Image (cartoon, rainbow, N blue to C red; front, side, top):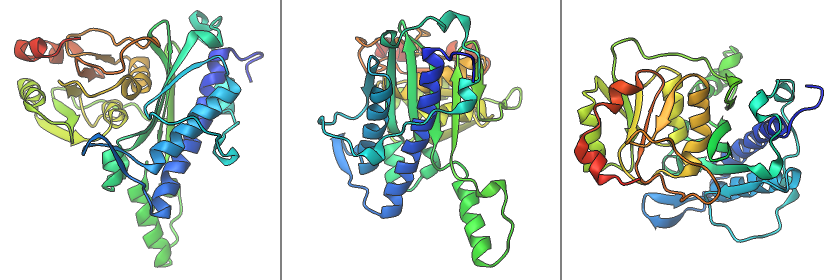
Length: 323
């Protein structure tokens, strides 16, 4: 352990363990078979029992350990006593051993805002597209996203299913393929960890965009990028992971719909490895507690070559999306 871990590093270490717990809850709800789906604003805006339980777990666990934090969660839940089994008290030891970037060493608990998406990619979760799903805990200071944790509850689940099949056939090939789920974390000025950074081959333009919120603006903007390929997937967390693992070169979403809890944690991971995430006009996103939750002017994110994609956003799209 660092001799005396700072508030920020203690918070990130807790968020890591808390996100892992939330990932376990997300898997458990599917295993039990009752998703408890309700529509929020429309048929593509869903909430499940996993969203509700994971948010209760995350927010209550954080608030117990860090009572002066401002915590903003996606789900609008009534206040109720939280079952003790939902509380995660652990801290990830490896994070506590890391040095805190000097510019954040004096931060106080009350200075921080935590943005929580307990289950990013809910629609895909209900449809069994489980590798789209993430748990997002983003930490902001003075309006800027500075630390974040992304848990992928179903990372490796297709390999995991193959492993079960092999075991069923008595083919014993246990190994890393059998490990289900992973947690990625990052702090600006320190780096991002828990994945292997990879870039799309030079000269390739692969766009990742929305699967369930498509419209003319989104289509016009994607087409203007002159892509070699377009991936339509769920979840902002999932799309940023595609950028850092070399599956896509730009995340383009020219529409309102994405919220601050969708982008706060993923933005940190991307920025920590030299990428860039803005709205469609090129403005940085703000994460102070008073800010409106909607990212009204969409999202443009890349690991490399941001200017190439930003220069191709049509004026008609920019005029239609007011920050």
